[in-house]
Length: 104
Picture (cartoon, rainbow, N blue to C red):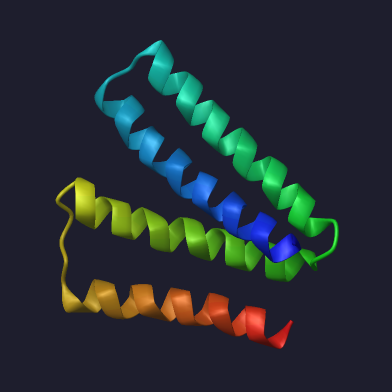
């Protein structure tokens, strides 16, 4: 269950990062509420995961999901470059997170 909490925390982290971009483009109360809510839920689920999983593993996977998700959201929705180098390093982040899961 803790790994599920960690995945949910990572998804809310990605949503929070996306909401930062939305908030910077259109500063409104709704965008701010969604931004704060996404990061709050991310921290809540991260803390639930860390009640069992080691801090180092939890934090590394959580930030990996956030970083990889941020790159993907940027490429899909904000017209950021889709160079093979970016995809290569993105895959390294994903493989490292999966590797940490396999050895824990």
